[in-house]
Image (cartoon, rainbow, N blue to C red):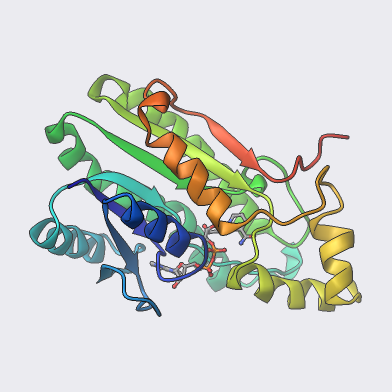
Length: 244
Ligand SMILES: NC(=O)c1ccc[n+]([C@@H]2O[C@H](COP(=O)([O-])OP(=O)(O)OC[C@H]3O[C@@H](n4cnc5c(N)ncnc54)[C@H](O)[C@@H]3O)[C@@H](O)[C@H]2O)c1
């Protein structure tokens, strides 16, 4: 059975990916700092610690086998004007979003090489391609994830490992709901106005992307049809910024 690791699989996008992969017969394991609310394979892991990732990989390999699919998905958001952005929050976002993606990839890749190949999918964001105010750390980290993905794609092609990124616009999860309240406060508007005037305004399709749609993109990127696709970054944003 194929083993997939999904970081941050205890909720939101990660959980949808896990349920989708499990339904297809994969052993899909969540590496998260929070236990899942549903009954899914779970190994505790803080992706910012190399020792913790090493321990989680060991436990996963013992219980399920060598992971040949890695979805670097976990994340948090923090919103603040750049000149007030607390350094500890900057460091936390960079550690989880960028360093975590690096560490999990670094440690999982040797097993993929030994197995003759693998698929790495990094959940970046439309904010890996464009910026929005008040998201200094998030935008910097998500742009960094796209750069890291390209480097890994170059290095790993000869090992039959593809590395691609998914760049969602807004997806209705806890991460999105928490920032809605903060954006409403910072911009002095209602949460409904945050949805229409900020989150969906630059989009051609004024709808949030669903967690299942992101899971569908993962299905494609791990399929045989995508075996020669690498280093790419797929936007799923309703067409954010097409008019610019
Ligand atoms: N929701 C959106 O609108 C949206 C848009 C674009 C990109 N994304 C990205 O999608 C990914 C998933 O976000 P989501 O919306 O499902 O959020 P979510 O808050 O629902 O889930 C994030 C998960 O990450 C876990 N996590 C946090 N810190 C961790 C750590 N140090 N180690 C391991 N796990 C940790 C959390 O416990 C949580 O289960 C994130 O990378 C996010 O930046 C989300």
